[in-house]
Length: 252
Image 1 (cartoon, rainbow, N blue to C red):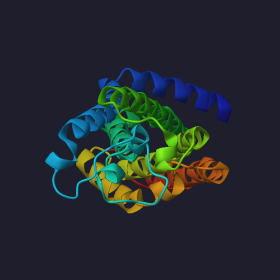
Image 2 (image 1 turned 135 degrees about the horizontal axis):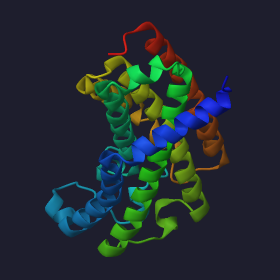
Image 3 (image 1 turned 45 degrees about the vertical axis):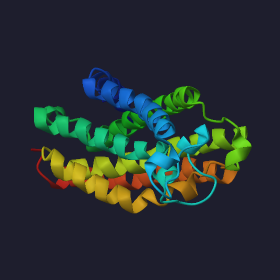
């Protein structure tokens, strides 16, 4: 009989191979890379005067990563790296929904694979995909900031190089929260992709205002510990809910 570790290793290999052969994951990486370039370059070219009275344009490349303060409702507060949480959640719905649509899930559990193996493996590989999206966005922000001629001075945004590094770590480890929410709702929606996506976006909007507080641009060790511990714990709790849903509902 296979141990839990061996079962999980096998499932991870299968899920990783399936995910990285999907065109959707590479499209998501491409969007993550292009998004900050388009945002920074286009807003720079438009300018405050052409954007309308009272508009706030990007003046510093680090504004595309976040802010040192709380949530702001202007352009720089809404169009930044936090948008990737929704992108990662949508990809989760697409990936899991394809399992149900193709009949993969039913075949998988017919050969006695366990629900916990499936949920844990999906959470890990989808977290890896989210990490890739955040790194692509960061690279795109550097490219876009260079093209737009924006300032890279960290002091202008009330942060430091170390704080920005901790900010990125915090944001990456906060991703399991959105991944696990999407995974749970995908097990509810199953083949009904529209249902899981709408539910995920609605739930994500409720958490969106928390992200700047949990992952500020001037993040410290406290924020990193909070996200590194809180994200996986939240994912574990919702993972248990996903297992219950898979056990209590039809797989089609």
